[in-house]
Image (cartoon, rainbow, N blue to C red):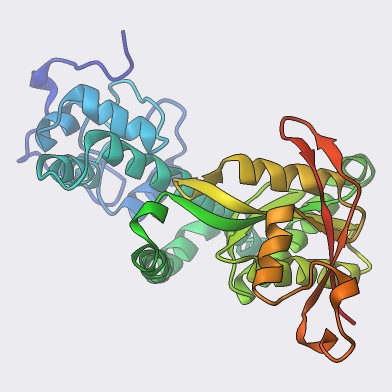
Length: 371
């Protein structure tokens, strides 16, 4: 039987039943076997409502089929819970909202599931980071005579409304920026756009994982990701994702991406605690889905990164040509008059043509900043 199959409708809660909001006593949130009482109280505090519904009851109350409710919950990244009474009024409201958007014709069913999946994946990572790093740091060491868990409750109580408001603020800012980019682009570029794509990769990271302690390795990765994110944002790019020893970013034009790539190299080489870095970038059509980017241009940027020299930036021919057309770099140093050299920001040096797995033969260009 599927974990979300429906029980007898008679199991539905009576709205008149008393509901305890303290997490203790009659009417309290039903705890599962082995569930920590404080964990239950924290959940109640964060969700702001007691457990009231089984999955079937929540779907029925929201007016949504069990099949669709199951698909929404799994898209959001929530585990199957069988028929435990673990859902709240907020879960019912979320189902109503998603289903209402579909019924009103504002979203297709598949798009609503994509919205649920993208939101769930993004916020799951955020929640893990805040809980693992932020809260653990603030509750260590615990107050005398108290466990970390006991300290966490008043801390969450104080932080939750502030973090919630900040999350909404940042989300609205990001939506405004993304909407502006879409509105200013051609209709044909709404999904398939021409973007500069870049990867930055730490050299020798696998060897470092064998040599460094886990805490040291974690600090190194965090420092790298923080530095990369700051540089990408500061110079007008967008960080797509981080992969521990590698970051993926995009920019609307090669000039912006070139500045980011050089800044990354310059910043990292100035830090003796960081390993060498290599950057690969390509310019071309990119498919965007759920905040990620796909396509040949992305694959090419990744391949260029893998063959880039230490502390250097490699770009593809289209990237180099676009820099030349924009007046950011000459395609041939032989054509640069001494009086004109200062007008260029970057220099390009053609490298040996070479086969790249899955992409044929490419001619990389070594990008550097002009003296």
